[in-house]
Amino acid sequence: MTFARWMTVLCLTLFLSGLLGCSRTSEAVPKGPLEVRLDAEGPTLILATQGAADAYGEAMDIARRLHPGAGEGIVDPADPAWTAAILQEHRPRYALVFILPDELDVNFAWRWLTISSEVDEDPFVDVRTGFITGETPEAAAAFMKRIAEAASGGLSLPGLLVDNLGPNAMAQKDAFDETPKSFFLPAYEGRMGLKTISHGTQGFTRERMDSMAGAGLVHLGGHGYPDRIVDGLNGPWVRKLSLSPCVVFNGACYTGVTGRWFETMGTVREQNVPPQESFCLGILGNQAVGYLAALHPDHGIPVYQEMEFLAFEGASLGDVMKHTHDGVILAGGGQPPEFEVLADGLGALSWTPAEYMLKGTAARVLFGDPALVPMKAFSGAPFETALARSPDGAWTLTATLRNDALKATFTDTYYSDMSAVPNQFNDRARLAVELPENLSSVASVEVLRAEASGKSLKHRLVGWAVEEDAGKRILHVQVDVPTTAYMESEFRHEGAQLELKLTATDSP
Image 1 (tube, rainbow, N blue to C red):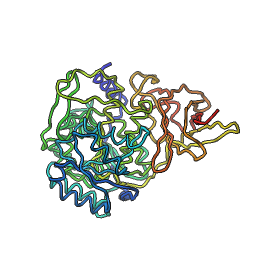
Image 2: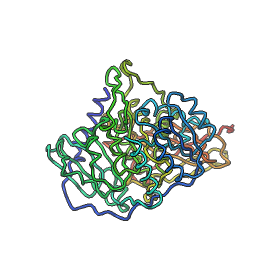
Image 3: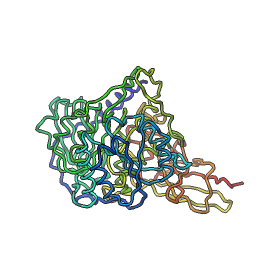
Image 4: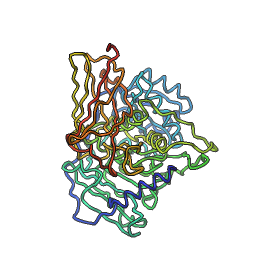
């Protein structure tokens, strides 16, 4: 099945499930503003390309005041080895990278992900990164100023989440429906007011430009290109959209592109979006204090996973993006993907649907300060975990599902070999467990059982690896289980359990 056909099947499933056909009801009611802060754990490194250093002096000065004592350096987009040496020298927790719009593309993002995962020997991301850019130097400075004001409490992010699902091809063309709830993000109920928007292919008119005002978190969905969400907002319109200070999560393809991009259906073709038409630069020039989007064909579900991770971890935006990239590595069997260098005229890519999704999700980037924490954790973690050692020295890891209000978190966004309905994804358990001092390095992981309501479930170990991070050793594991329908399975209910056997390297 081709990638385009695979995406069409998924979208049609959503439409037929009735998820995109909401009815207008009462207004969503915002709750208290978000508790924004700057993560003090460091160190932080301020980097810039030479072009950005020359153009973005005002924005960089704001960053220096926000991060006093941060290291600094110049990176060369054409010389990954130079950049790798800087990261090895400083070994930062956070990197704030200033870059011109025409210097950032998917090739750079993939190189950066590789380099930022090679600071130590484990495969996971070591440097949490955010990019600062803008349509003009003044726009970049304004973006950085909003971030600093949000971190200091000078700007308030309202307690409302707007989930704009994008155009619904099965609705009337001029339809525009709003409802004060969210099918995809029920975990946010109680902490934030919720509003879901679904509209027809001609439904987002000028009269709807204030429909996302008053939201501190915004999700945008739909099919995308660098200049637009198809049959929805486009680059010029997002500049005029009524927004409050907010963090924007975008799942539409290519909507993080600031200049160069590559069309990969057939022979690869290099394209460029004019700065004034770039959807991304439009968002950054509006009221965003953070923007998470992709520089390549993307996948909408990891975006919801990012938002759920934020809900139960209260993480920095850099940690949110690290969580996504670490998930790509874990789903690849505990190893980062091998990235082609895309260039005009390159022959057709022979990627599987899973490879498209893995590499597309690896092209997601954060625009903003990676140390910015937009809110406190308020939702329970997906699993309760327990490590136990038996008298014979064997280790057992038990994971019990506790928060079934989460939805995307339990979806494997890359594989569907265990789904009852073709191409509708497996379910998964993704675990991150800190290892005790008396457990030496793990040599192997084996799934002993997966069960729900006393019933044994089929299972598959997708990948695992141990991460060294800030003096901690963290075991990451992904196990897949069957689904019965889209985002439905016997496993995703409170009390479902996994049991895994860990073998230490020094075990007999």
